[in-house]
Each structure stands twice: as C-alpha cells, then as structure tokens.
Image (cartoon, rainbow, N blue to C red; front, side, top):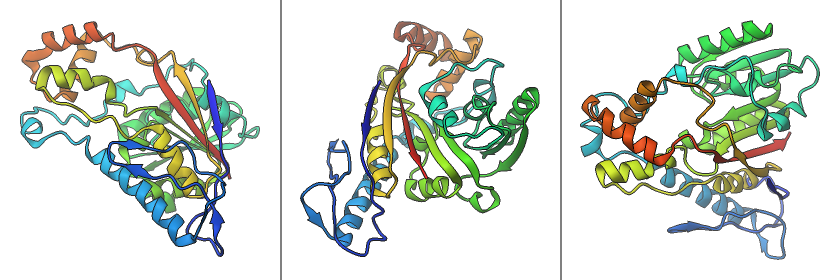
Length: 310
C-alpha cells in the first residue's frame, strides 16, 4: 500500500495570496500528483482558475465514456442499469483499507451516512461500532436491500431516495460519510464532494477504482465493436480536485483481492450483465462468455481510498 499526504487550502475563500502548487491538466495526460505548498505565489483568482481547469477536465474525461449513438441505438436494454443482485451484502464482509479508515473515525454507537449506498456494503462493514445508518440511493430497490441488511444486523437505518447532492437538504449530518464506487458517475463533482463534507462531523471516506470501473471491459469493446475506450479520469485526478477544493485529502492505493468475487452470480447472469453493458443482443451470450473466460474478469483490482477529516 502506498500513501501520499498533502495539505489542502480552501481556494475560492482566500483573502490573501497563497503559496500553491497548481495542478495543470494537459490534453492527453494529467499532472495530478498533488496540490501543496511550494515557492510559487499565486493569487486567489489564479487558484480558482486552476481548480476550474481540474473540474473541467474531470467533466470532459467522464463525457468521453459516453457510448456512441450508433452502438447505443442497437442495445435491447440500457447498459447503465445496475442490477440489485450485484450489490447485496453478505453477513460477512471482508475488511478493507476503506472500511478501516472509516471505522477509525466512528465512535461507539455513532452514525454513518452512505451515499450511493447500493445494498450497504460500505456502511454495514462499520457495524459495530456504528449504531445508526443513513442510506442515500436513487434506486428504491437498493434502499430496500440496505434496509434488509440493517435489520439483520439489528441497527437503525434511515433511507433517503434520490440523487446526491439533490437530496442533501433532506439528509442528516452523521459522524462519518462513506461513498464507495460512485465518483466516476458524477460529472459535476465539486458540489458532490462539498455536500459530503458538509454532512460529516468527523471524516469523509471515498472508495473508487484507480481507473474508471468500466476500464476492465475496454478489451471487450475493442473485440466486439472495434471501439477504443478512454483511459481517464483516475483516482489521482479526484485527489487533485479534493485538495484544490480545500480538503486535507489523503489517497491510499491498494489491491482489492475480493474484486469480482464479492457476489456469487450464476455464470449465465454474469454473462448477461456483461452482454448488456456491451450493448449486444442475447444471441451473442456464447461469444461474451468465451471472452470473459479469456479475460479472467474476476481478477483483483487496484483501488483507491480517498479520505479527509472534517
């Protein structure tokens, strides 16, 4: 596991020039190693411009993941659907770096807010010490699965249906806010992160793959559609944004050995979900199955924990 630490500054609310290492995004690659004090003095306006550049590149990089209309038009089902069966939570949850970072900040009987909760893996891993949970998700079926998992663990749960940060005003503050595998779905990332921070009394913990979660399917897009997929953004880009927004963010990179094995699905269902993601028709299932076997799609994945104290 590697760890990089850097002090953040709240750009946009500065009253005097600061010393900041500006992170500039260039076409084709990013210098997003860190944002920290150095010898070059920049004005608040220059710091704001650097932040906007980061945010604009994040939006642009995510937009590049859009599926071309000529392919999307051939899909029988939406490739962006998230089946609830892939997000259910077992009674035993393997510990991880992200769980540990969050657990360290949860007091006994404390509260946890899980944004983009799915079935609740990020929150349930914190029970105990957490005594109450809040879940935010835009799918009612996910919230229902979250409620079931909370009931099995004998913990109180409040459910908030909607998109973050649209429902932030209806969501209570909690000791710790967790948000796993959501960031790459959020183009307007600044208000999203600020709302997470606003709702945490102690700590914010995000987990995300180092690269876009659909990156492991890039060879399949090439195979079936001769389509080259993007390579950005990355977790380092999100770290740079968090620092530029003023959060004292830390990025820790680790190998998730459980990736692809968290939920045991019948092979036919796993193939079906992959085929839907690829906008292919049902008669291509055998080809998709062969491609998945060749790719060994259940291999461990490099994952990042991005966290800061409030």
